[in-house]
Length: 503
Image 1 (cartoon, rainbow, N blue to C red):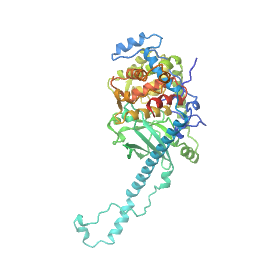
Image 2 (tube, rainbow, N blue to C red; image 1 turned 180 degrees about the vertical axis):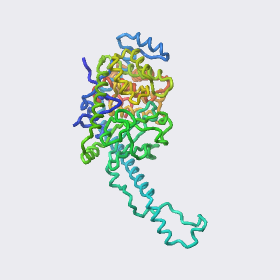
Image 3 (cartoon, rainbow, N blue to C red; image 1 turned 45 degrees about the vertical axis):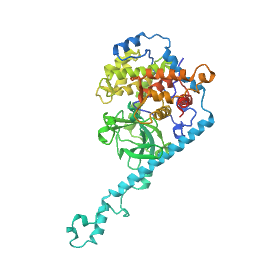
Image 4 (cartoon, rainbow, N blue to C red; image 1 turned 60 degrees about the horizontal axis):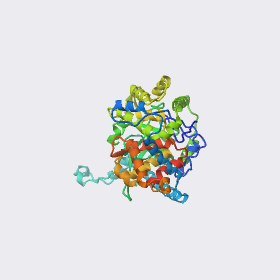
């Protein structure tokens, strides 16, 4: 029996826009009952059969080959988390939380938008050469014959006369023709993955900028440029070298930048040649309005790229379709976390990149049945730059798929609540303190105690981690990625996070 996996992206390389006519809860404060119900064109995930993984590569292979078909104890303990889906929040509590989140999000976006307008309008005036000419003319009219010879400390030194009107072409009206979007960094580094980014694409000159919103405590905030305002081009995929256009901005789209062009980026990000950002939310009203105003006939070249990307998605769909979906539904946590750990063990250089032989080995060890032809097609798509190396997170998303951005947003909320120091990792001790199992159905019915449910969760989570005493964001996300496979409805999955974490 086929199981439709809701909320799984079809292509991690060339993300596609949702089918026309779909509404998205990302513009409704995350209040949609089921975002995935409106996204039927979704892939499935490939067959995998493995046991728990250990440090040695040989032991990993032996364990993977020795696994029998029955569910393990860890599988059953992980499936206990599905119980929260049967005990959702009350409507009143959900509405109250959603309304508060919408208000907070809108206030944050308004703060960033105001800072962007202020930065760029001020910079346009201050940097206008006409300011110097006008100021010099005013000073010459009042300068005494010998005053230019006076010591510099006695001269009038001003940056610019801010009241002067210049002929600068940049105006507030021009900057208002923009599309605002939220983004996240696709990274295994938890600190970077949880950065709050807000971007703007300006149609008057096809430029874009991205700012980072940072909050310190309850009252102190800071909004700083993350990607400077300029005209940029795609750095990865079928559109590599093509300038960003309005049609490139939609939920699920990837934006790529060369790290070397942005010296102010954190060192952890500059370690990678290409910085990849995922659009998680967008001002759909502004986007649709600007597309209507700026509509024009697409070029033949643009149509060719669309056709290539469509073919790429068919390749991913074909690979992801050949699986035992029921098996993955029950073993999702152990399968995804185990595959992630195995690929990480193969990454001896710790740069997130693996070679073709490494991926073939992983497919063979975990019995992923991908034909030679499909694998070669997959490799050609992912290895677009021809350097012989591919990010293994990107490879895993191509083979298995991933949660939609609506679900991922709640995973990030839960982790950021735990990671109050913003380090990218959380200790098991802190997780034990924050995890609350009192609303689990088995606890309410008296079949289990809170400590039993909590211990089951911690045991399965620790099995997904490289270190036994701490959890990284990547490991935390992989855990819930596995749980997500067995949950059809978005709101059911969200309840699995909301209930024990109180988000």
